[in-house]
Every structure is written in structure tokens, then in C-alpha cells.
Amino acid sequence: MNQNTREDTVLSAIEDRRERVNDAIDEELPMAEPERLYEASRYLLEAGGKRLRPTVSLLVAEALADVEPLSEPYDDFPALDGTTVDVMAAAVSIEIIQSFTLIHDDIMDDDDLRRGVPSVHREYDDETAILAGDTLYSKAFEIMLRTDAEPTASLDAIDCLARTCTRICEGQSLDVDFETRPDVDTGAYLDMVERKTAVLYGAAASVPAIVVGADDEVVDALYRYGVNAGKAFQIQDDVLDLTVPSEQLGKQRGSDLVENKRTIITVHARDHGVAVDDLVDADDPEDVTDADIDAAVAELEDAGSIDYARDLAADLTAQAKAELDVLPDNEARYLLREIADYLIERGY
Picture 1 (cartoon, rainbow, N blue to C red):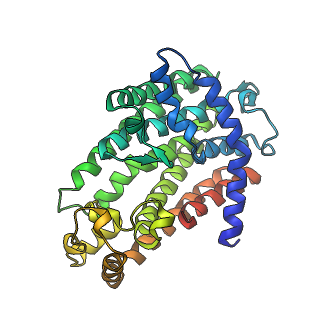
Picture 2: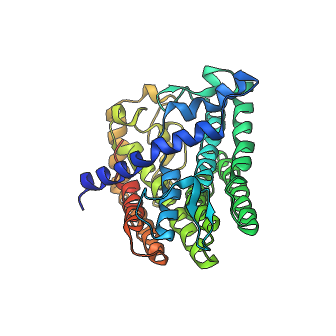
Picture 3: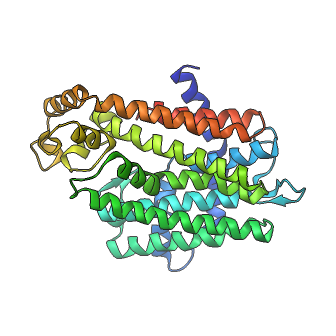
């Protein structure tokens, strides 16, 4: 399948589920008092987003139940023991955690925009944004309790979500620490990426398996699928930051270099003798020209660092897809494979 066809297939699968997810978010996270808090909590969720992670969750449930995609109601979905569960509640919980992390990330990075609109702390204020993120965090656990899963499975799903949130915070802390550490190697970077980004994909893939009653071997394999695909996704972001024009990125190309953020590319380059901190002589991304970035990219290409990142992303994607062998051979499993490839082939 070529890249354009794959993108169309994946975006169609997401679109088929996005409105259902959006409707469920409205139901699970209604407006309440104090109104300003709930407006801020819902702000990014209403601003858009592909809903990729909840799509993964819903497809995993469909693959395990071996049903035709979109043929069963997600809020009354067939579990493997013959009962029914609400897999949409699990999917919404994952998406709400994603929104919580974005709000707090934007505060920490002092970012002005998110999804084409002012970030929550810019639209409201820092205090309201912090409280909005905290509200989403707690609401995600409330919603996860409403899956109607068997009690042990429900507890396991909550445990997975809690451990995921802890790991995300650990990853964010490491990412901040890495900006001033000269000794970051590829192993440390991949560990940070797994915690900060990939574990939420792992939860998106494994929590619905827990809820419908899959055995531990299947749950663990699906978690690895999500984690490996999530790591590949972040590594591809490192590549795109240097290789995609600014107007497509929605930010200055090469901003990671200017801001001294560690990426798999700069870590590899430093290990191969490149003076990474001297690649771009500017403190503000707006002061960097395309010629500056082109020169930096040429040096990184000469070191083999960009090809290394691309190859690593491809290897991780292959590992992710191999984990799907635990699923029945059906349309939903096929779409999960296509999503893994889409994550490293997508443009902006």
C-alpha cells in the first residue's frame, strides 16, 4: 500500500470513530459549576485533535471480539466472557489523559498555541489551566470506573491508567533534565520517550483488552504494540522537525535545535563527534533562517544521524506490528497495522 492510500485508510478509520468519541466526551465530561473551570477543561478537547488514541482503543476491542468494525455499540460492547462492557468509556479516559498532559506541557514550555488556538493558560490563566489539567486527570479515573468490566478487570484497567500517568510525569521530568545534561545517550533518550509519549499509546492498546477480558499474554503484547508504535511516532517527530517546511509544521523548522532539546538525532550526532550545541547560533526560533537549518541538517546527514533515526523508527514499527499476531486475523487488526505505519509516514 502506498503512503497516500494508507493515510486515506487510517484517516477514514479515525473519522468513522471521531464523532462517536466526541459525543461520548460531551456525555462523560459535561459542563458543570464552576463554569470557567469546566470551560477550560473542555477547551482543548473541543479544539479538535485526530482522536488517534481512542481509535486505537476501539479497534483493539473490535479485533479481540472479532466483529466487523463499527458493527457493535461501543457502550454496550461484547466482552470475551459473553457479557457486555463500555469500551468507549475506556477510550474517552485515554483521550482525556492526553488532553491533561497537553495543558500541563504548554504551561511548562510557555507555549502560545495548541491545535491552532491559544493554549489553555493563554486563553484563561496559569491558575485555571493547572486546575483544568488536574480536573481532567481525576475525571479520567472516574470515567474508567464506568466500563462495567468485571471487578478484577476494572481494577487492572485503573492500575494501568495510574501507572501510565506516573510514567508520563517521569518522562516529562527527564525531558526537562536532558536540556542541561551533556551525557544523554540513545538508551536514556529512548527510555525518556517511552515514558513521556509511548506509554499512553501502550495504555490505549492494552486497556480495552483488559476491559473485554483478554488474557495477560494478549494484554502484554498489545501494550508492547502501543509502546513501540509510540516511540516510533516520537522519533519521526524528531525527523520532521528538521525536514518539513515551517508552514507545514506550524512552527519554525529546527526549533528543537534552537531550544536545545535533546532528540534521537542530536544524541546520535553528539556520539559521532558533532558539536550539536554549535549547529545553530540563535536563542530564538524566529531568528533562524532556512539556510541556517539547511546547514545544520547537512551536518547531521553527514553524521548519519537522520538516517539512523528513520531506520530506528522503521524497526520499532516492525516490532509493533509483529505484536499484533496475538489478534484474530480481521479488518480491525489490519487497521491497527496501518496505523503503526501511518505514524512514521505521516506529513504535517
